[in-house]
Length: 439
Image (cartoon, rainbow, N blue to C red):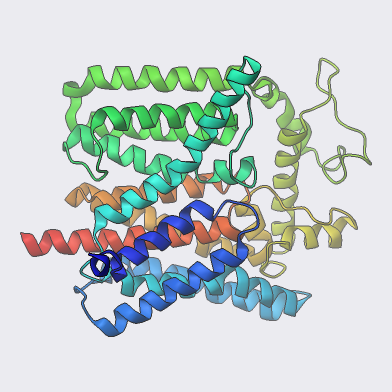
C-alpha cells in the first residue's frame, strides 16, 4: 500500500501541486528552487527507468526552433550588446537558462507510461483554484465582520498582481472543460457538472473581489471563445445554454466595470499619456506636474503610467533596434541612459520590456514562438478534438495578450508560463499518440 502510494508518478504529482500553490506566495524562492531540483531528479530516474511510451515531437519542432532561436539571440544581446555584460548574463541565466533546463527535463517525465493526462490537468486545476477559494473565504469572513464585501484582496498570494496573473491559467482549464462538456460530454476533471458550475461561480466571485481590470479582459476573452467555438460546432442546439452563460458573464463584467471608476476616464487619458514629452509625470510622479482631466481631477496614476511607459518603450525600441541587452531591468537602464532618471521601472508591458532588451529581432522571434503555439495547437484541436491542444491554445493566447499590458515575460511569471505550456504541449502529443495507438 505504502509502496504504491510513493511511486515516481505520485511523487511528481505532489511536487507539481506544491509548486503550483506556492509559486505566487511570498518568500518561497528557496522552496521553488528545491522543487525544481526534485523535478530534475525525477527526470533522471524516469530516463534510466525506460518505462516510457514513444513521444513523437515532430509536430512541435517549429515551436522548439523559434524558442531556441530566441534564447540564442537573447544570449547574444547579453554577451555583445549590453553595457553591463555580467549583469545581463546573470539575468539570462536566472530568467531563461534555469527554466529551459527544467522544461527539457519534463520531456522524460511526461513520456513515462504511468503519467496520466487527466491526473496532471486535475492537479494543476485544483492547485490553482485553491488560491481563489482562499480569497472567497477572506471576503466572506470580512463580510460577517464588517457587513460589506472588500475589494482588491489577494489571500495567500504575494499581492494582487500575483494572484491575478494565474487567472488565465485557471480560466483556460475552465474554458476548455466548458467547451468539451457541451460538445463532447467529456470530462477531464473528476467532478460533475453541478460542482463544476459552483466552482466556476466561486472563481468569478473571487475575480470581482480582486477587482483587477486584467481579470475582466481574461473572462471576456474566455466568454467570446466559448460562444464562437460552441456555436460553430453545434449551431442552434446550444443557443439556450449560451444565452444563460452569456447572462452570467455579462453580469460579472457589468459589476466589475461599475465598481472601477478608472474605466470612465480611460479614453480621455490615452492622448494625454501618449504625449510623453509635454507630460512627464510618468518619469517621476512626485517630481513633475500631474496631468488633469477635463473635470479638473488628477489623471489616474495606473492608467496614465502604463500608457506612457508603453509609448516611451516603443520609442526606445525604434532608437535601439538591436536592443540594449537582455534582462528584467532593460527598460529601466534605457530610461536612465536617455532621460537620466526612471531607475527601477519596467514598462508594465512584457512585449515592450522584451523589445527594449532584445530589440526587433528578439521581439519577432518571441512573437513567432507564441504565434506558432497558437496556430499549431488550434489546428490540432480542429483536426482531432485534442483537449490539451485547445488548452495550450487558450493558455498561450491569454498569456500573449496579457503581455501587451503587463510585465509578465519575467521572473516567476515567465517560468510558470513556460513550465505549464511545456507540460500541456507534451501532454498534447501524448494524447495524440494514445489516440493514434488506440485507433
